Length: 155
Image (cartoon, rainbow, N blue to C red; front, side, top):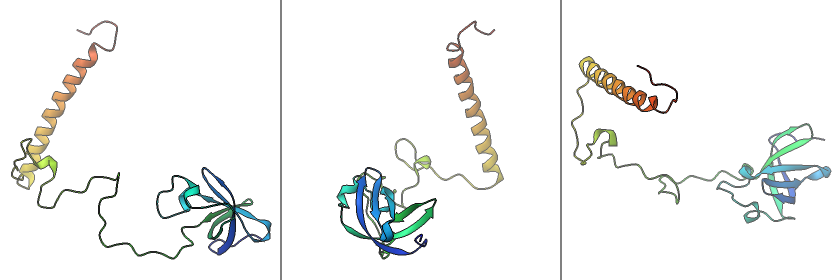
């Protein structure tokens, strides 16, 4: 009998691979717990979390064509997330304080520039500046690419 999707079962770790662990279930069946379904944290090595012969509770994610996909982390009770988290080691840099404007509104020296006025006139000015700078950049790019294309130069 196939295990029901969404049910929590008890099993033993039969073998460990670099991509997960095979769990022996009741009735001689076995299923795979992928490395991403082992813990709520990053898992670099499955051996850090599981050992062969260890009893574990698993949630049945899917059962197709004799393959049973399992999850250990979804079988655990949900943990409350802390209200505020500090920066993680090796993670992205913290966001700038709300008192500082985004980098595209600061001048290179760090002095703040006044925000442009809102309305149609400001949009038209922005569009003109964008088009002129874009055309200049495209002309520079075309000039630099002419020598790299090979063959004769255009006249």
